[in-house]
Length: 264
Image (cartoon, rainbow, N blue to C red):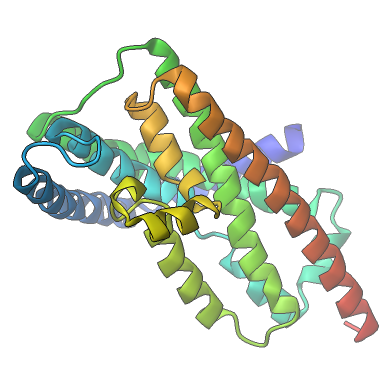
């Protein structure tokens, strides 16, 4: 554990040095937050003040929490994995005393921690001052929401890692990455809440791990879903963590065997 803590801390410090990029990210996050908020407010107003369980205040909270959590949850730091696979440098990672997945997960946690504090919280504060936020009534929502956020980061990490591990069999993964990003942003609920989807698309979304990355932590943190009702959602996150963790491990083992057979 001390080793992984050191890796996470080093990743946090590394990203804290990118001050201009952080400032640009805060500005961009804030601008897009106002754009998303205006669109959602217009939709709710035209619907009579409420749309599928979302009022103006709840929509504002949804938008600003989404802007705050997107970068920490996505935090696409595993892109180097596909490059290292193609270059053969992944063999060095496999010889290290740390777990391959554990190494990159620790880096992800450090990076996500900084992105949450440096690029996520400032837009959330701006949103709270300008549009207001609907805060949860129960303190349990904050505790369960923090746990849900950790699960969301982990689920997103594992899914993203699987996309990169596909480099063991694909010569180029950029196309797969683009498709994954588009599907993730849609089905996770980042663009709009999945409850606004038509029934057929809502069914598809709920059959994927993507709502566990954005929709669930937002609903839990905001208190829109009370703690007791949020427990099954958090349990679903944990289920996806186990499934994706097993799949990522199997992909890694299969990829290593493939590399050994080919003489890599």
